[in-house]
Image (cartoon, rainbow, N blue to C red):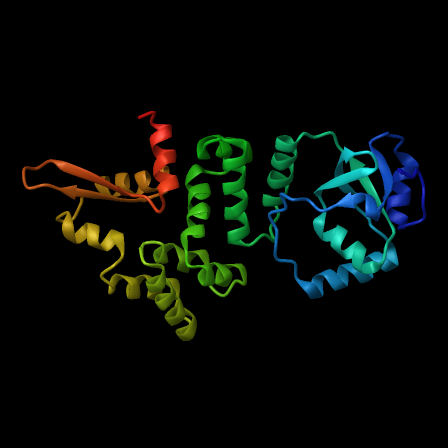
Amino acid sequence: MVKNRFGIGRGVDALFSKVDSSFFAKLSIEQVSPNPYQPRTNFNKSELKELSESIKQYGIIQPLTVRKIADNKYQLISGERRYKASKMAGLRTLPVYIKQAEDNEMLELALIENIQREDLDPIEIGISYKTLIEELKITQEKLSEKIGKKRSTISNYIRLLQLHPIIQAGLRDFILTIGHAKPLLSLINQDKQLEIYNIIVTNSLSVRETEEIIKENNEPLYLSNKKKTNKLSSNLLSIQENLADLFEANVKIKSLKNGNRKVEIHFMSEKKLHEFIENIKL
């Protein structure tokens, strides 16, 4: 049952006293369920505890955004951190803004709002981009238009999901930077990625030192390309990189003895190959 008034937090009470809108309400916390599309999966426990203590003292200053999914049942669109902290604080009611949204629209609203946050880690951002593309059935180009990010930026974040799971965990915990991770993506073998990752962490290598140690390894694709294509021109190397971003795959351009060029595309999975075939309508 939606309640019109209850005493929780001076900031929210002031808001409700000034705004007469059917979209604002106060709900029992049992009526609200988490957002299944929440991109943020790492919640710092000490920060949640601090927020919980603040909520106990001052209440919730900013209402959570929810949508109605059934009679007396609502689902979060945004505000997961405040929701978790409120439960920790023992609150029984929540101030909310009720928004009309279908599943796809909710996914888009939730993810686009959350990926604008500064506290998401690189893997959470990559998962958010990938989920939006797959669930909304849009291209990277369309997504770039929606969120105002370059397509290459979106592609680079999604590619981070190809790293060994332990390296992804290192990115989430900010043990290494994206600058360290990007050269690691040139290694096909995830075990080799992990081997280099352990060297990076153990020796506190800089990004430049990481690039150097990978250059000494024979498995990076971009290195083998340079060796096997008789030093591709800067223009061809740029084309090779752009194709890799476009197809989300490892791409090699080779020079043949007769002077012709050959393009090889190495897909990470059969699913990616089928997606590529579908996109070009073969």
